[in-house]
Image (cartoon, rainbow, N blue to C red):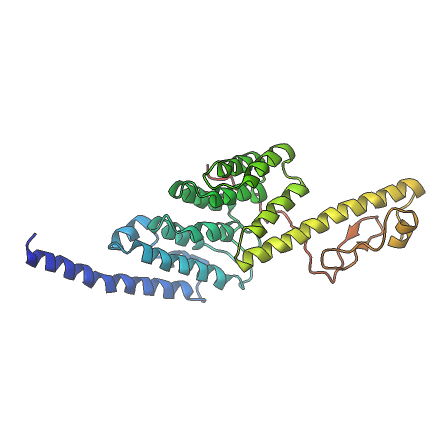
Length: 303
């Protein structure tokens, strides 16, 4: 190519960059609009084809990936305060981000959390699995992604076989920690036991530095501890009924029967409340919450 041709190509490339970023600015401004309907929101992601955006990036793939990932985080955070929250644009933004930069690990790790959470997310563990599998394919040997996949299968999809396989795969990577092999064996033996749940959430807490994830893990661990406490206390109340023909009227009666020692309290220090049916419940003043099932039955995971 002649010098004139090279200069002309360079000029066209440079001229296209402002147009590209102007289009992105317009897109982001439209995503931020709070007065739209959900139908309008679906139309506002004008550039939702990852392949098309990649062609338009002119080699600035990583930069655009960061922009779209930032938009995904802002979009997710901006909608949390909405009542009856939905996230129709979350998957397209994550899809674009990780197509532009397959090495963008934060998008896989946190994006999967945004997608999978039933209360403060999209309640789409199937898409979270699809995202993490994409990350594993693009980043072989990254055991943290295998751990994320195992967690998704275990906690949100209740698929203990695939969860065990994911943890085992992570343990076989060059830097895979030994606890992943133990976790795989534990899942094969115990499935969805409370003890297994507490072990997995403990690993989530200890292996993450992000304050939000650590807070979520800590709160879940408190809830799981309370659930275990309630089961043990209900068993003790049932034993009292077998002895005396009726449920205990108070914790003091159970202590008198040597079925309890002291006043049982939850992880926040509030005493459990004994109901007339012999079932223990959390104190209404406590902030502890026992984990619940997803709002809707989990969709099949993308294999």
